[in-house]
Length: 373
Image 1 (cartoon, rainbow, N blue to C red):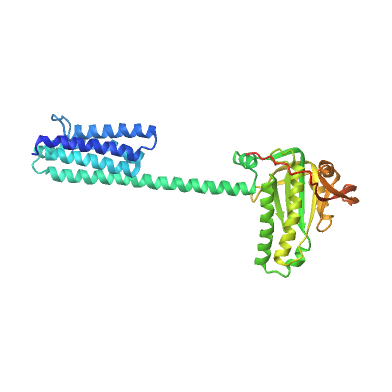
Image 2 (tube, rainbow, N blue to C red; image 1 turned 90 degrees about the vertical axis):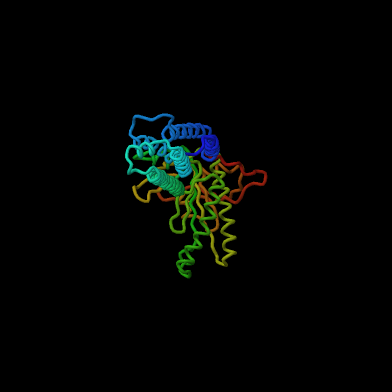
């Protein structure tokens, strides 16, 4: 039997382990408090079970099993660190109890001469370590799966927001069957690359897609910079709107500024690729209806006479020019230069006065766009 004087060293060592463990596994005050409670209960229970001051009336192996709930608690709440600490504390105290000829394994050996306390201790250590580490491994795998699921959820959110505006995506996630909104005023822009079909006949499929991607990616950045909402691309056509889904007081100006930037970008694009690219751009301002259609590959789209007329402004426009309706002209005439084009026949609307947007007046600086977070 080991001299009692060593008990103080073991107790001090156990306390040091407890304190260092709290620092290792406690990341928040609440977790620190939980770690202190757990380590306190684990230490007290270990000494009561494996180093009792008097004989207990309970079966020895039943007493040893009382420590397992604390092992499970540590492994589930504190992972691998909790599993290692609970195993270390229990096995050290149990070993000390056997050395001091106390505890359930000594009681079992006294009751049955065939039982060796060291063998019982070894079996207990193996079961304790296996239980704790298995639980810790399961919890670690669970945490990894949780992190992976969160990352995949974030990717899905980003993909959804690449297709739909944020408020529309939120409505869709809330299982709204019909998503439709009416806006009293918005400005719609249609743009189309002139003679792109003819030019594309001289390109390989890869070159064709790469060129379109380069152009439309630049347009996407412009739309984001001006606080506008890209609606869609169809072939070599591009559609963008200002004033929805978030209110934007200067939506007509934002669209006009983007249209002028699109022209500049097309000139630079033509110079870079040594190809005669140009665009027709049409703009109209008025009420629109916006919503989501379809159940697969759904899109956020616009409807209404304003949209139809904006499309006609583009299709019946002039290559390299920005044609706008009188409604848009009235919104912008104080701050932009225009050239009257006169009346043109618009299908379903008859004769309409249209104007060519030539540029922004020098004294009129671009207004900041209004974006909702």
